[in-house]
Structures are given as C-alpha cells and as structure tokens.
Amino acid sequence: DADVYGPSLPTMMVDKDASWSVTPTEDKMMVNPVSLHGVSCMSYGFVAPGTGGRRDHKNGNEMNRGLEADAAILRGPMVSSIVEHLTKRTLWGELDFLIIDMPPGTGDVHLTLCQQMENKIDAAVIVTTPQRLSFVDVVKGIDMFHRLKVPTIAVVENMAWFKGDSGKKYFPFGQGHKDELVNRYAIKNSYTFPISESTSSAGDNGIPFMASSCYDELDVTEKELWDTYEALGKAVVSETEKIKNDKTNVFSIHYSPERSSIIVRFIDQDAAVEYVVKPVELRKGLSKTSEMLGMKTEDVPEDIHPVEIELKGKYAVGITWSDGHDASIYSREEIRKLCETLDSKAKT
Image (cartoon, rainbow, N blue to C red; front, side, top):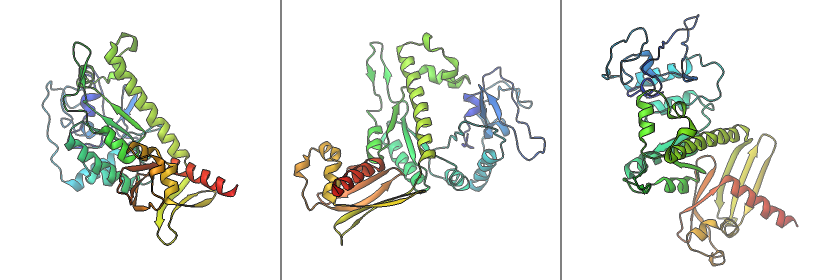
C-alpha cells in the first residue's frame, strides 16, 4: 500500500476481530509483513497506527473503538523515503507477485518506486472511473509509466454501472472512456466494475469480496462481479508471464523519407532483424484501422506515408498518416507478423 496520505489496507484487509502487529526481523534491519487472509501486506497505516482510516484493530497500541484517523502530514521527499523503506525493507519472503497500490497522480511516489526498482516492476494496471476528469489523469499516468519503461497491461473502469430492480443496467456517469484508452494505447485487457454494495461492504469490514463470498451463494450480479475479478487476475498473470519470457529487448520503428520506407527493427538476445516496409503495405496489411475508420483497403492512396510515429507503451505504436488519419494504433506483435509475411513473399 504505497499511499502514505491515505493508506487503505488497515481498513480493507483487517476485520474487526483480527489481531496483528508489525515486528522487526531478528537482526532489526527489516520488518516482517502483516499476514492477512493469506496475503503478506505492508502499509504506512500499520507502522503509524491511526493513519489507516480507523482505530479498532488490535496491534498492541491502538485499542480505541471508532472511525477517527490521524492525518499523515509529511513533505514529498519524506513520503518517497517511507514508501521506499516499506517496499524494500519488508522481508517479503517467497512471493508469487508483489502488487503495489499506488496513489493517484504522477508524483514522487511513482517516480521513486519505478526508478529505485528499475527493471523489477514488470507492468502496470490502470484503474479509472467513467468521468472525463479521471480519463485525463489516467492518460498522464499511462504516459508516465511508458517513459519509465513500465508497460500498461490492463485498464479497469471502476464504479461504472449498477442494475435496477428490473435488471436493467444504468450508467450514472455515462458510458465512460475505457474503450478510448484501449484504442489509444492498444491495451488488450479491459474490465468494467459496477457500483456494488457487496464490494463496498466487504472492503469496509476488512474482508475482501473474493475471500468473504462463496460463489454458489451469490446472486447473478455478484457472480458477474466475481467472474470479472477472476478474469482480471488471470490476465495479469498471463501478461506478466509474457513480459518475463519476452526476449525482444529492442523494438524500433521509424519512417525514412530518403527510402520512402518504414524501417522496423527487432533485437533480442539471439539475433537482430531489420525490415524495410513500404508505408502503403503496412497500412493495407494492417487494414483493421482503415476499416474502422470507414475506408476500404483499396482506397488507401499508394503514396501514403507516416507524418508521425510514436511508441505507445512497450507493445504498441501510434501512426499519424499523411491522409489525416491519426487513430491508427498497431501492436508490436501485429507489425512483426506482417513484416515476416511480406518478407516471406518477397523471397518467393
């Protein structure tokens, strides 16, 4: 829990009857995590009791019943230092994943963690809400992670809808901008979560929804919620495994006016390969964007060329074309397959 100003784990993971404590290791150099619901946890709300949202947990110091909380009044550099200590000086032991819940924004905490843990943060999952204001902030977050070489593997839109008594879905904040994010950054995994009394109640009582529920006892809406949580978890596992097994260290693409061609390079541990592709072949070969824009493949002009090429995260490229279309987002995998196909045809 990397949110020092508003730590949430003491509320969302600790039920009222739980006993817990933060203890130092034998050599006094590190601290042991707090084990809750089978998960190793750490939060500023654990080491500075009272800052985590309520004081009804038994940690040896705080026994006062109530919902009042002390404010964490700290300057930016001190916050970054605290987060770094909590992350790197907790004796985590053997982990499947280390999940860091970062605060909103693009501040010191994000920069510190990404820079101090260089090449150790595999990926980011972006959480947003349907409002336009949230979308604008999320775009900044994705761009920040891109600059720090952390790929975004999933987008989650929270509190997007609810079901009325008739079973009809209502979207009180509009349809949201999740699809716009997915299309802009070619993010394959996207999920929408409802306004849910079950989830809210579970978090308020310190027992996560997935730990407090039995699937067979859930109603239809709650089962849909469970399935979405499970799908998100499986996607994170799958995508991080792909990243770890990905041997492509360098992917570059640029347009050469002198050669009237797009130059694509893939460099990995074993080999390096360069492809020279005519812009019209790339545009026609990856025709789905043209079709999405209502343009038939045969209508693409032969002299079309890129005006701007921009990497979108680690796995996608955005191209603004000379005919004015700027909605073309291609994944690295798509481009490589097309290059290999065109190269194979040229050799035969």
